[in-house]
Image (cartoon, rainbow, N blue to C red; front, side, top):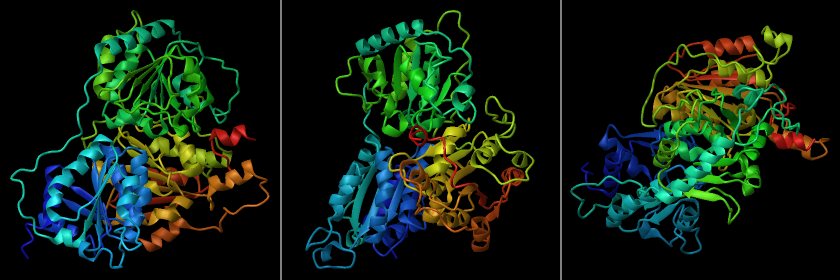
Length: 614
C-alpha cells in the first residue's frame, strides 16, 4: 500500500524532523491512520499504547519532566478524546509542552449525527472550543493542505507557552493525499527572549549586594535539621529560634528545571551566600543535602522555612510563580521585601503593584548566569559549593548509582519506629517505609510521587536523588498521575524509576503497570495500602465531626493480586521493614517491580493544614 503522501505521513515526517520520536496514546478507528504511518516510518519513531488516555498524557508529562524533551499524545474521537481532558489539563497547569493529535469522525459527515461527532454542528459538542480552553493552542484541520501551516504553529505554541497544543484531525483529512510537500521541514523552536536591560540587572545587583551584606549565619542547625528536624518538624512552634534575620533567600521553582538552569542557580546561590527553598514540584532543582537547602515550600514544608523567608533582606524568585501549594502563603510576607524575579516572562503571583519588585524576563539560565557573574562571593567566606544535582535534561544517564552515600535524616541514625519495626518484626508505618526507600534510591533515579497523604508525606520526607529527578504533579493534582508519569520518565532516561502511590491512586490508574511490563521498564512501584482514600478520611476527621466515613475500604491484597494478574511483574507484599528493605535492595531482573505495604489510614501526614486546625 503506497501511503507515502497522506496527511498522516506528513505529520509523522514532521515529528521525525523535530526529534519527537515517542507517541503515547490509545489506538482507535479515527486515529488508526496515524499509527499506520508511524509503523511505516519505522525507527526512531515508536507508538506506545497506554491502558487509558489520561495515562497517555501523564506519560508525556513524566517524559518531559525527566528529560526535558516534549512528547506526542494521540487519541481517537469520542470517549478517547474526553479521557484526555484531565491529563492535558495537568500539562497546561504545570506548563509542560506536548503535541496532542486527536482523531475525529470524517469531516464530510459533520452535522449528520455521525458516531462520536464533536463538530459543534447540529447540537453536538464542540471539541475545538473545549480543547481551546485546555490547551495553549487548538485547531481543527478540515483541509489537508492546512496541515503544513498549522502543525508548526501548534508545536511553536506548545514550546513557547509552554503547554499542550491540540490538533483535531478528521479521519478523511488524515487519509487525504497532500498536493505538495515542502522540500525541507524546518525545525521549530520557542521564540527567543532578549536578556533584560542592563539597568534592570544593575538594580538587582545593588539590592542583592546590600542584602547579602546584611545577612548573618543561621545558628544552631544544619540544612538537614531545617528539612527533617524530627517527627514534629512541621509543627509551628512560633518561637523563631535559630535564625538570624537578613541575607538573601532564593525560592526556586520548576521554571529553572524547564530551562535546564540548575548549574546557573547553584552558582548564583553560592555567590549570594543564600539559603534556598524549593517548590515541591521542583524538589530536585537544588541539592537537598546542601547545608543551605531549607527544604520544600508550601503545606508539606516546615514553618521554619516560611520564617526564614520572612526574615530575609531580599528574596530571589527563580522560575517560580508561588502558587498556593508551593509557597503561596508567603506572598503577604513579601509585600515589604525587595524581590528579584527571574521568570522568563512568567511573573510570580505577587500582589499587583509590589513596591520593590524587579523582574528579569530574559531566558532563565542566561539571567541567572549574568547575575552570578555580576555578584562576587563575600570576601573571606568559604561557603561549600552548591553543586547542581541534576544531569542535563537531554542526557540519558544510565549509571547504577552504586556507592551513593545513604541518606540518614538529621538527629537520628535509624527511622523513627517501634522496636518491632526496627528489628523487622512489626507492621510498617509510612515514615519508616519512606526512610528505607530514601536510603535505597540510586543517585540517578527518577522518583515519581502521587497525590494524597502518601504524596504529602513523601514530598516532606524523601530527598530528591542527587543526579535524578523528583516528579510530582501539583497543577490538577490528579490521583493516579504517577503511574503514567513513571513510565514516561523511565522511557525518556533509561534510569531506574520509582513510583510512590497510595492504594486509591492504584485503583484509578494502576493498570498502567501492565504497560510497564509490556515495555520491560526498570520501574519499581511502591504501593502504600491503607485501604482508604486516606486524605479524604483525614479531612473527615480534622474538618468535620469524624463520627462517619465514606473513605475506608475493606482490606485488599494488592501485591498478591498483581502477582497473579501480571506474570510480567515481580510483585509481592512486604509486611515489615526488613522485608521492604530486602525487596528494594534486590536487583532488577528485566521486569517491573511492585511492592505493596500496609499502613494505618488514621495516620495524619505532615501537611500543615491538618495540624493547625486541630
